[in-house]
Length: 327
Image 1: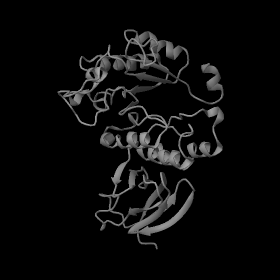
Image 2: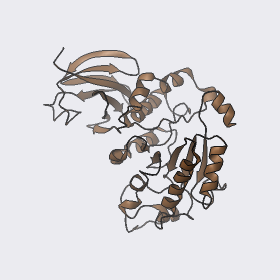
Image 3: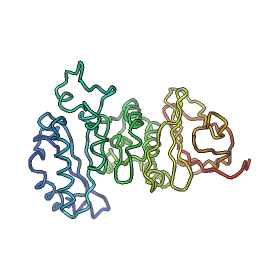
Image 4: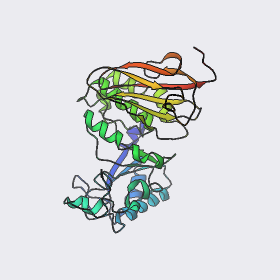
């Protein structure tokens, strides 16, 4: 199987869990991480997803931390390059309020796994363990799920670095329950977040427009920028949000997200005199703007740049500061 997948130019991953049983009830890796890691390497896998479901390996006694650290070390010892992903969304970290005394928490899995100290937060303890880790619940092929998962990345931006990526979960683009505009919005936000892009649809039946969206070279270049900085929410005055990401060459990636049900004018604040602008503390007088998805140059702008964005849609821009007001 792995040989065939590699022969068509793709990578292949395998799934396990820190507990004795996976979320689906199959055998997990608890107590035999070294053997499993070597097997994964011998079989030719390129990616390991390590899930955190069930209650027999809690976080409070260090079981999850020790199990994942052992899996990482064991994978490294095989000598095979393997991307290691800790899926910490079931539910080691999804908590809207930090609740160290677990007041009113009744879910048994949550009692075993929700952080009661800062050192139990996955983006703290896993930052030197995994190549990528999830910091919210599983995503689903629904608009609200995309919004929830992306917005919960905002609080962990500073924990991302090259080789240590925050993961809002796999892309649902192409699964079929949303509009193409909604999928385009997800791509724009995941790109600005610098999140790992894992295709979640059936690639055997992928539509041409979906494939073009997922393989847009300019978007992928932004997502894989060598500085590995996670972009974040710069401003959300109403239904339209402005997300920004500084890039290695001094330009910025911008996603203009319209969460509303009707089209709306999205405004990008460029001039520093406008409350510092959307790039504060960077002082940008004027900027050249390029529409990434369409591949069109939109000219040089100063002050405010306005763009009409459809409902449940997003524009992805590359904004390059210029030395003067070349209007």
